[in-house]
Image 1: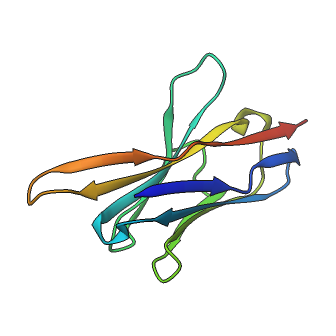
Image 2: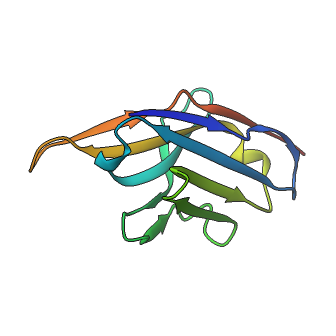
Length: 119
């Protein structure tokens, strides 16, 4: 499985961006997916996740502003980001958890897309 993110760029504070992550390859192996971000000098952190049954989870810092969704027909994961703040600036990564055996999982990461927010 390969993941390709897009949609990053420059936004003003209070603005919006929509990130996309397209999966290719053995997509039938994909279970849960998520968006993570990493700011300079910081550790990578979970932004939002979604299960194969569309149960979602959000970091407290983005609740009410970001929405994660997936379109299985298009093999695409989305992150709608509204009311952006300068502290949202980071490289955003898409992650997919693959079921590779009955009890074995493998996490796959995309290459990241840069989000910059101007104040």
